[in-house]
Image (cartoon, rainbow, N blue to C red):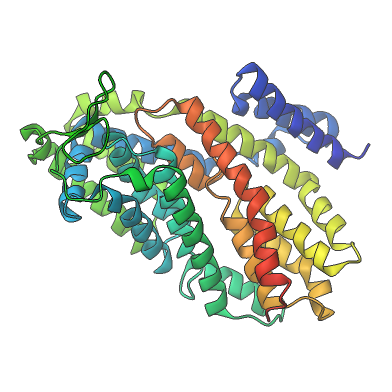
Length: 436
């Protein structure tokens, strides 16, 4: 058995053990990275650690630390009430507002994880307060970010269009952008319906807290069963010095990331530390609320994926597909590989590897280059709601008041559905017709 097949088999075993024995998958993945790296690939410890996602570790810790501070001093509560007032009390509009904000941020140049890092904590705090499915809210934020992610001036769009130019392939920037936007918009609409979006209050309600009366299930003032509207508490609608400072820090985060291209994780943790200096009680509480099990999970899995990449397992799978003599079948399999691998690794990195692999059969003229590139781009990014991707990890880490193990499984199942369902759909609609 080849080293590549062994590494894939070990990954399957990690999934099975984590699922059946309730062991943190990140810890298992670190062990797998050590075993496969040392015994199979003959890597040194330094070589194995090279795959550790240090930047993602800082993003997860920094963003969750900053927004834990915001929750501790009531800033997120104040923002939730302000958001309700902004949409006239229509709770059902909030998921779409978050979708739009994420999309605009990526369309004008923010990288997708940066946009999600900015929007997801507020969106999920709102979801917890108003009893909206966290899966719905998290999916809306991520799909919004990916929907705008391939505009001609966006980071993702610029990278993919640059690869197309370098490989001397025909391309269409507008088609790429619209393909991603339409697919993510359709998926968001389906998720909105399936996850209960139609049951959310569509008429104006007070900017107070909607609570579920689970004891008697009585009907609330908005006509929804089990819902009641309370007046906002004075403490939640009042701006205190700590809240003003936190709001300033959040604005500074947005400006630093979008205007100055600073790292979202390092900026977040710096702002959180600055706030903790002035309000140490809030800071102490916030450190304990950083989602360390999630950090272990994501960093462990991605370290093992880094070992797979260094071993050539990903290239091995891609080349095996490109050697297939049936261009349409090879195109479908490349879309699947893009989706599967991107669920655990860098979406743009995967596209950078897969588009060149597609060049030989694109050059034959049997497959339209524009449709194929758009299908690869969508397949490799729409799965970013997976808890193992940066965006999905941010959603998981910033969801307050949830059963985190259950939410992790929901995100994993949803990511799996995206991996299975989206590639054949985009293949059928973009590749088979021969766009390009």
